[in-house]
Image (cartoon, rainbow, N blue to C red; front, top):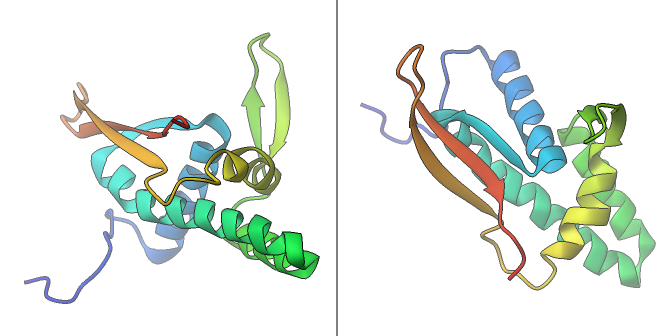
Length: 142
């Protein structure tokens, strides 16, 4: 029985699970859409939404006092990898600062939205091992 046991272990030890969560959230922020197993998507969805909320609060409180924005950026930097290498349309690779993209691009986009920043869409089973696959994406501003 799993009474009062929260979270998923994903058949990984603690350090591996933490690194996986950080990397998947960073990929979601950089690419705004990731394809992964349903269990991993369900695991990182609340954490990703909390990161966006943290960035939104940091921007709102930062207007009154810049120290609040710096504090929020430091919290986000502690919970996310520093950068990601992303391939653009021309086939060139560029370094993307994850925290900067979160605060400059994503948080202002959801300034008027109270939660529900991500959408989870099931896409069927993976051919190799029959694992349930899902797409986790950031919703468009509507």
